[in-house]
Image (tube, rainbow, N blue to C red):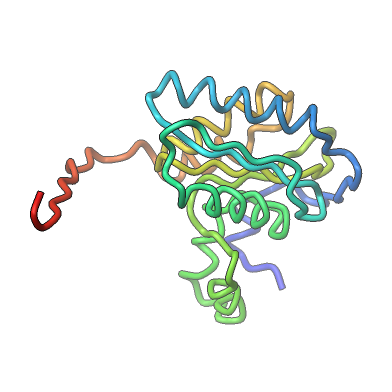
Length: 179
């Protein structure tokens, strides 16, 4: 059951899984490319890479990245593989008239915001790539990793186009009792 939002937003057509194509060397290339961009932008992130079966190949947390980014990055990578599309593009599926997709929203590991991208090389899905630690910039950071590996960046570009650059976000000020 493919809804119209998916058809319009993610056009790769037949996208077969290429099992045994994601290795540690490729995962490290993805992560290093992304981490370089994250440092350039001033973010401490976690990167996660899984193979075409959703199995974790590598995860790395940069110094000072929040601990919660470990789980989120892994879930983004898995969601990108399982859904065969960037995680942010699933948001459209839950807003439209396709009520049959609503249960996916409640899947324990399912992520529907930017930062998870399928790794596609030679029109085959070889794995998933998850970035956590920024917001909209997770897409820019992931793009650098995908470029470093020579993977397609069409999904990232589509997400960034749909979402547009972030509006100026208010500075958060945390106050703790007694501080």
